[in-house]
Image (tube, rainbow, N blue to C red; front, side, top):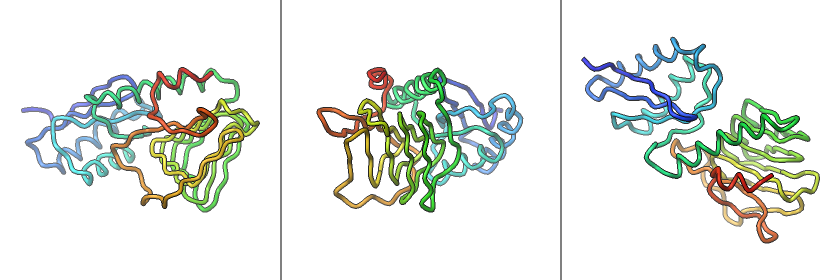
Length: 224
């Protein structure tokens, strides 16, 4: 008999192969058990997740993410399809970003959401493992990477440096400022909340204005 769940890894990601013949509740129970057993092995790694072998609904995806969260210390930042080139590029960019931040003096992480008009300010580049909600803000003298949704404000290059950037898994900001350049959307924000299959974006200065592009390793390599 086929196993209910098989866990395999790929660069900066985990693939879950789910048995399509068993009841979903049985599969979900096995996910919880296997991630609980592997809690120390995975640690607090930042990973993308691929779900294969079985069609699952958005509600099922959320329940899988909740089960992994309850039984491990992993940070699952998004669900991807490994066959999509854009997702592969994003995973490479994520790995590259972590290496660059680790090598940068003073680079730091912040774990948690920013809400209720909270403001996070630093002189270093920062990765936020969470969402920045409307009314809240991240301020950095260098670069900002949000492994979650940017629905509030982000100010990068606080020292006037226009070579900084802001990257987020879901880019729906109230306001962005990079160096001396500002961006504020003209249209009303969509209902915020991360969708499991999103396309990460990076905001940076190009031709004296803030532009938004897909977040890839090749693009990230253009920054110092």
